[in-house]
Picture (cartoon, rainbow, N blue to C red):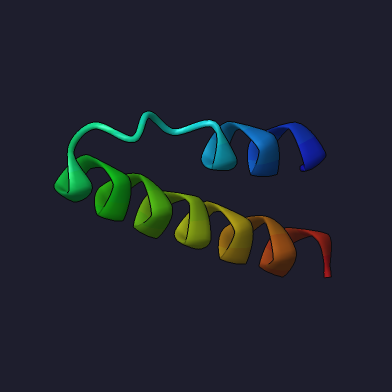
Length: 38
């Protein structure tokens, strides 16, 4: 899960929409991972 967080933080600064989408996807992935682990 740590590598996933790093991947989310290493998003390119170009394109605010891409950043928003990636951050949203990362949040959903973390939520799903949290649900499956707990």
